[in-house]
Image 1 (cartoon, one colour):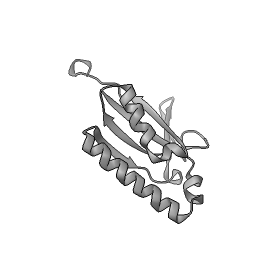
Image 2: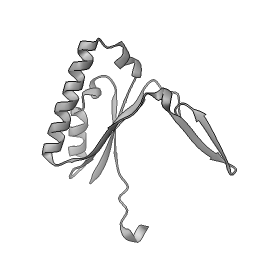
Image 3: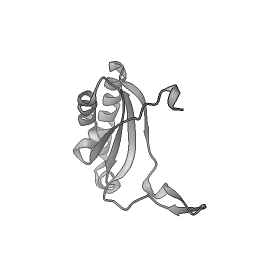
Length: 120
């Protein structure tokens, strides 16, 4: 089953982190990515641009409205994701706990809605 591991933390936590700690965390991310790939669970991953680059789109009464910034004002912002394919939720949670940002933010784990060809 595929799961999306969404990484959310405060951008300021990264910005306030000493450069040596940033380098150490990036090394941890590299190690995590290698471990995930070797396991065969890796499907995809990406780091997102800063929240200042976000644009929200809403369509109301047939009119498209765009707003600079995220959908909601929160203390934590989505900074990236891993898409994994594992047997069950317990395996997904185990991988989520290994993501370095779990120590400074939150990893939201959500199963993908798998649609077969008959569902469109």
